[in-house]
Amino acid sequence: MASIYGLVDTLHRRGSELDEDRLVEMRLMLHQQADRLRLLVEQLLDLSRLDADVVAIRPRPFAVRERVEEIVTGVAAEQRAAITLEIDPELTTVADPDAFERIVSNLLVNALRYGEPPVTVRALQLDRHLRLTVEDCGPGIPTEFIPSLFERFTRSGATSDLPGTGLGLAIARSYAQAHRGELLYEEAEPHGARFQLVLPAEAA
Image 1 (cartoon, rainbow, N blue to C red):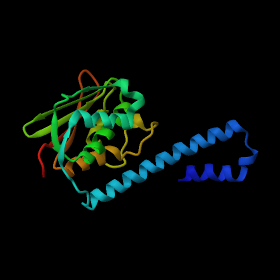
Image 2 (spheres, rainbow, N blue to C red):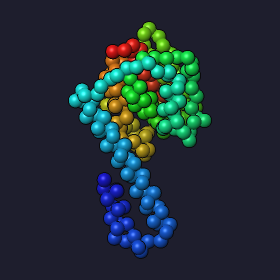
Image 3 (tube, rainbow, N blue to C red):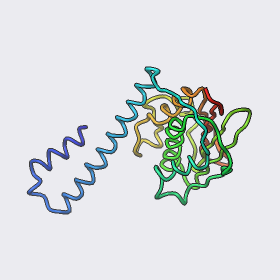
Image 4 (cartoon, rainbow, N blue to C red):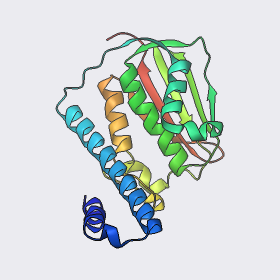
């Protein structure tokens, strides 16, 4: 909010004195800061709903690969070449598609932002559960940070210079648990981060 106010105040008071290059730069900064604020507000609203236990989970059948492709297009269209999908086109599940999107989109954004390509998404149905993994080839999560990985407002020192609020994984796990599922982390081989979403593949 302080960044946005400062930019708007400068444009309001001195906009007519600034050259075009500076105006373009400030407008871009304003757009970026407003987008960060929008994301933060959305995440805080998600947390308030989850804490109040008012998130309705409505499972219905859907094709997993088709749904993941829609999510990829929505959050990472420009980086589509860096994402590999290893999902049987015939795989279907019964789950809440909105909760599924909240979780998978967060995992994809994190893998692209903090990891390294390629990012691989795999899914299979096993023991009445859908198991979906998102794996990148980056350095992985520092060992000392793993115990607090899903806590709110926590960020690794290695990612402190990158955009983020420290809320995404907490929200993703909360959505998984609201769905009677779980979100887990494990180290990938030979290196990288692997998150596994486990959802009961049956109507609640």
